[in-house]
Image (cartoon, one colour):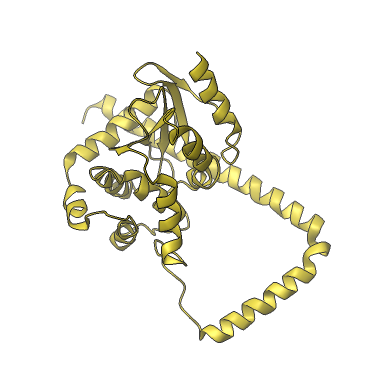
Amino acid sequence: MSQIENEEDLTRKQRREQARADRKAMEEAEASDAARRKRLTQLGVIVAVVVAAVVVILIATSSGGSKPLKPGTSKEPNKVEKEVSTLLAGIPQSGNSLGSPNAPVTLQYYGDLECPICRKFTEGALAPLIRHWVREGKLRIEYRNLETATREPETFKSQQAAALAAGKQAKMWNFIETFYHEQGAEDSGYVTEQYLNNIARQVPGLNLAQWTSERTKPKYASEIEADAQAANSVGFNGTPSFLIGHTGGASKNLEYSSLEDPAGFNEAIEKELKA
């Protein structure tokens, strides 16, 4: 490996570490704000807390000490599958893209499947964007791979390749959305072969044997690396990050103010449609 390649790898690693530190700082700030709000409202909710504690005790007593569920196994096995299937039903998928290939606007979404901030996007602004713009044929979304939250590069490649392999059967978006809903605790090492198989089993119609053999193909490692280089070329070092533009044309950085409220995304999409 050349000195230039070593320097590029080092720079990429430094950016990942910086992004991870920034994300943790954001999470700590949010936790601090939540603690302040809790102190202000504690007196008003104390009765509800006591009642909830009693209910938890009764449930625990009656359950006979059931074991906690592993990541990738939903508390309600069919709930996530139904939610994701309902959201995506009838929308064209091809490889990493969701939506009609003739949609006038394309949103490129750079994500890491272990990124908790990406999960906020899934649980917040993304669903309204899919229901409104994608389902109406005005927007297509392309999922791109960028390592930020996953600590081990090999784990990152394995989990992202698993999603890309599901795309071979037009099921990638079912896989990634299920993964985000079933995320474990960051840095806990929850992404194992069992976890990935649990996610795959929650994707309706996915041929598991085909998916298993497809995952190991080197083309997916090449695609993941190409996405990382593309992200580096536009200065992305955190996830989620977005580019938006006319389909088949140039794209530009989409700055968002909230991942839970789709308003900023709606404004950017409307601007592209009017351009």
